[in-house]
Figure 1 (tube, rainbow, N blue to C red):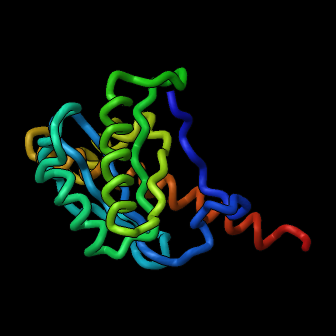
Figure 2: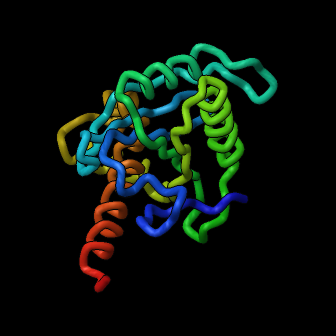
Length: 176
């Protein structure tokens, strides 16, 4: 089971110090929620929900094409894929789905000569937090189903951005 990555300005392969938009993905078996950040990488916002088409043995389908189109449209410098884990930190059944989508995106980007990193972020309780936030804002459970994946992607990405800001703060505060 892969471990989630963590934003750190110390890692040579890390893009934490690069300004630019990040894309967050909440990969499910039926839908993929997509979120993006502002250029300063401080705030996440919902983008869309992509219907999942590509199975494990399929060639890339329209879902992968759409994700790549969004990555290009937003000029993403980093892709953050939620890594589903239970409260004890073990992988859920959906880990394979997240890994598969991340692999396909990474492969297609590299084949296009693009070295945008694709990393994993711990997504524990993001759907729960997203559901609570939607309910608190007056969105009914029925209406919320249409956007819950986007809201979960926002939770994943915002958590990553907050960790990124903390890593930057520590870097700036540390004595040289």
